[in-house]
Length: 425
Image (tube, rainbow, N blue to C red; front, side):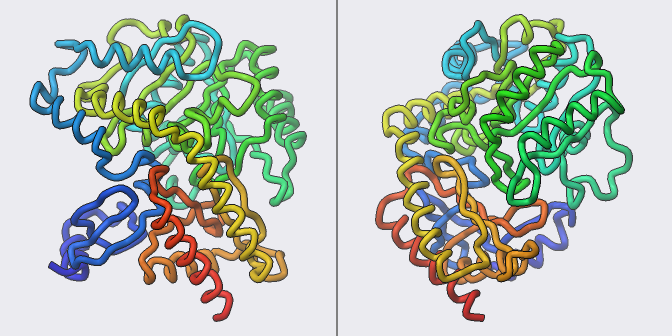
């Protein structure tokens, strides 16, 4: 088979709304490498969008899934429960930030986790409104895209969004918005449009994902915590992309001196299998009546088994430390390249959740063409990269945290060569 042949079949069979960044059709993958149907090898700096943090087909994860598949694949936990579901909840309750009693519910996707967090917050507070941030991404369901702070392509053509969702600016000093201005935006919202007594929750990504990999300043998190406490509002940390060692902590919120009331997670939780969760204050999580939470596939036994293995691998292979080490080296290399490429206006991110932002050479405007050209050059040399950002001018780096030294060094060479090739025209 050829990639081009499969691409023609895809165009005829798959809905146009399912976007794609490459036309590489994968045949197999291992660790940080993938091979397509034509036998071409690629280094994967996408990791399924921060899903396979422990690498493609990690032996521990595959062993756990095979063992579970031989026992049973599905009973629906709401019908015939199983101990592994409860044990994983216990592990997450212990590891999610917050010095208070916690409970967990398992669902299937990150968007579903966000939906359930909002349901729980509304049930616990008796309030309807939710505040989110510009540039945020929280999923493609109606509540998820209503919370998302980016119109194209997530909201375009889908009609009216969910009511009682409000957006405020996210602080990005590179784009002229400070933490003080972001907090002032909430204060203004409370003065002009929204009674704080109607607000159930404020939801925030510790590091914005699709929005451009902008870390939330510590002062913002402290300000939000104080604001929520003063008005009886719940703080939700969306850790779908930041979770499971990606930022150098198991959860990114460990890097702050405050804790959220609810945490959503998915992506890296189960090493490539669909599993998501909401973990939060026990009394808040218990607000919904029996039957109000859950789902047919929520906490599927295969995903639960994989997640147990993922947590073991993160601890045993010290992947939080590895994320910090890899990220530091990547930032150092990008900073060196930046001396020759003024289009790189920023290199940022905690752990191995790193981004490079590209502007025009005079720094005056976002430069998505340069970012996309770098992505294409890298792909032609065998390195898979992803772009993001409201302006599409950011490249994000999300390689598996288990990437071997020689493969990582090879990837850095390809990256530098690609950036310099675009700069040279």
